Amino acid sequence: MHHSWRQDRGHSPSIKLPMPDGTKIEIKARETMRILGLHIDRKFTFNQHVCKVAQKAKSIAMGSCILANTIRGVNQMQLCTIYRACMVPVITYACTVWWTGKKVHLEKLTKIQTYALRHMAGAFRTTPTKALEVDMAIPPLEIVMDTVVGGYTNRLLRLKESNPIIGRLKDDWRQTGQAANTPPLPSRKPTKRKKNQKLNQLKRIAKMMYKPMEGEHIDPFFPPPWHNTAERFGDRLIITGVPKKAKKKEEAKQHNERVHTLRADQTQLLMYSDGSMKAMDTNKTKTVGWGFIGYYRGEEVLVDRGGLGSKAEVYDAKLMGIAKAVKAAMGYARTHRQVKHIHIFADNTAAVTLVYKPKLKPGQLHMLNITHLVDKFLNKRPNNTVGIEWWAGNVRVDREAKKGTEMWKQDYNTYTYAGRRVREAALETWTKEWWTAPQTGRFAIANNFPPRWKTREDVVYMPREIFGRLTQCRTKHAFLGEYYAKFLPNENIGCTCSERYQTREHVIQNCLEYEEQREILREANEQMELGTLLGTKDGLEAMTKFLGKTGAFTKMGHLRPILNELTAEDEDNDEEEESWWNRMERIREGEDGGGDRRGGLGRG
Image (cartoon, rainbow, N blue to C red; front, side, top):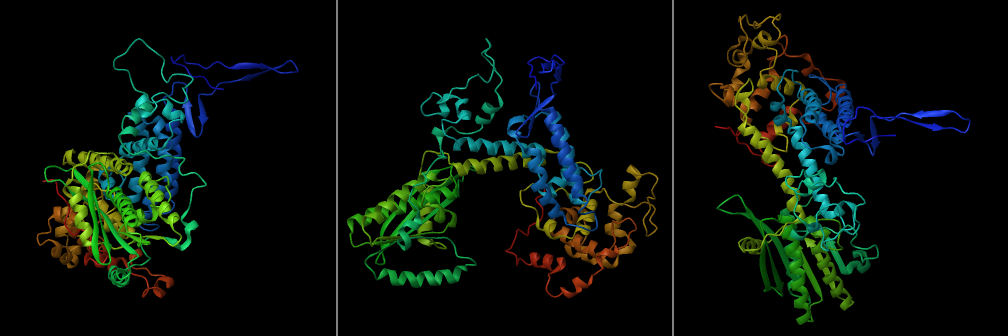
């Protein structure tokens, strides 16, 4: 039993039920009621739910501590995976219902994230979390919640008008205007007050998204189960994506040989389609366009292009290009009856493999049009065939797609654009907070890497023990005399080299214990400036090597023996398994695909 009061009466009366034997059983009301994992209190504050969620998340965070410490165990990226896979779903469960930005909720949950972040990075418990969030590519919890809520707004575009949720929204969310199923009770008690009425959670979420009439809407019940499939036509309909382990040069050679054969056949029509995105010169707006070219017996017979505006993605343009190419090819085949085999080539494997038979995916309308045209062509004559295949790209059609980006088109919101904007807006908010935060504190000199979703390469490949020491060094919350002076006054503040006061600058630049290995740092920066060594990619790689060969920033100042210990199994696999050192060198040389080798993007 549960009571929900509009006013806080401070109690929930119990009831007494008579039993057949004349006795009575008292049933007491509970403070919360659990429905689908959501704990609802009397006034719908969800405070109790957040407390229970925080307890669950804390248990997971403490459990992950068993797997690693700052020296050995699973590495920081595996701990990060555990956090994302186990803790985040628990924290964000049903947050579309209860998350309204309340500080009391945020404070309780942020403590859990802070605990997990410090363990992941091997940092001291006094370390500021803003530094760790950027390094581990884990945004503040407020941004995580807003991103999850924003993702739910996209789900509203996948609901039928008959859905009870759509029935509680405004009339502009329905084509018919009226709700198919009128809610039995209003979401709020009617009042005489008309202005500045507070929106409920559902309407607040719906306000973040475009209306179904303003953009793409996905029908959840389409297609019906009896709809045709590609298997029905056998080898007359061939849809192939990118081959496994495909090499561009080999694929191009095989494709050219095949096209050379097809050109001599008067029954073959070849179509190439593509999509492109171009940034406008005047502002940050990007426009999207599509284009296609058709070849018959080696001659260009069909060409067209068009724009999709600034609220679409390259995926939408490529899918539109395939749809336009199919339509043009079918029209050409009607006037040239000798054409029996149509080949459509595109360079996006996702668009190619999804074009036939509409699915619950973005671009559903394009899939429907393509399916209708292909079915009509294949049913017309039994010897007609259609092939929709992946191809690495065509320079000629790429130029047409780029021209399409310059063609004006009224903006039409697409589902993929809305999904990307949710994550993009979250990253913009995070980056703005990073830029506007005052450059103060011990981490300021190393805080030169802007937030990003993907974890940096040095964080991914660095050994656990060295990453922990490097994090402690960069944040200046480490085994240092100056740290002891502020937080642990009973500890010795001197250095192992007899320096009276041990500082970060002294350990990196002047300590006699590490003079032999300091040449590694001079290769990155001759003056060994801390801003370069701790705030750029080249500097961090030099610091990684330096820490790997010294005991800098350890409690005793000596290299920990765990780095030099090898088990029998390690010795057996020494020739087969690549070491972290070689991996870091390979990344530096660009063999992993040539990542961005520029230094950190400083604020000044």
